[in-house]
Picture 1 (tube, one colour):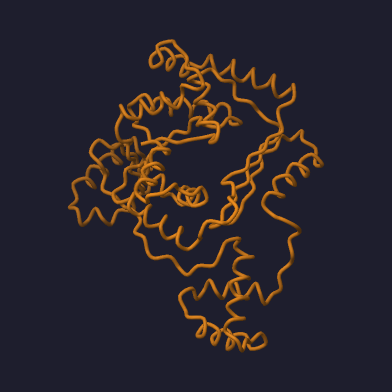
Picture 2 (cartoon, one colour):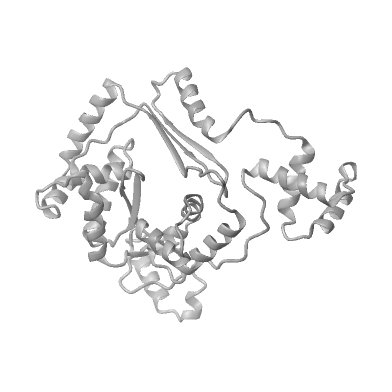
Length: 357
């Protein structure tokens, strides 16, 4: 499935449209990737997490954007540089081979990319699952000793295999999405066209580190020139997670220009100046995090014993100040510790690739 298909499936399961802020949390915490990777029970765990967040954090009266992106467009020098890099990239053997073997010499239009990716994902089936585990000291993956060691591990009984320090992973490919979503991701099978496209994109990113993976994919498929803006900024706003601003700046951008660009994004996250917090309220926030499941009356008593100088006589005022302190420090509404959701250590699927480190 593609990321968009996962989201539609989730909407069907919960019986309503998926909220952008909660979807961003599911993506950040790895739930979306686990479903794309085909891990057992991953979709059920995603539903549980979504329902929990939806109940704990009701939708705000005003809709919040999931992401705010801003750019300072390239100047003439960066425009010329982008063209030069694209010319050099078009001469790489990996790019030429993919366009001839997979695309049959016909480049796609930009609006055809999403459909082509979805069709190839359906043809390939499940993406490849990778198994990563450490080798003993002195072993190299290509050495005969290392290969013998891997063979011995494969012959161990199942109860012994469960003690391996194994990590499971699957590769995904970023590609240009519709206008309202810049990038989407899809799991890839190593030996299929999408796996080959992933390797070509990786080669381009090593050669041209200013590019992004979705840009590299669009270049290979469409010959679209990846633009190099003077500044790129992303603001993530969520009612259930701290807001974050990410900046990518050309070194020729002046300090004044950089400060003004940051200020534009900051206005979207903070309404008004940032007020300092007292030591009491900072300790209240940490104290609340340390005791998430305790009743307010008992928690007040424990706080009064720990900090008699800041003791409370009324439980309501204590709860009000504690929750307000938590929300100011974390940027999200207070909730008790969420119910345990099992994370995955799946068994390797037949046909999955393996590599040692």
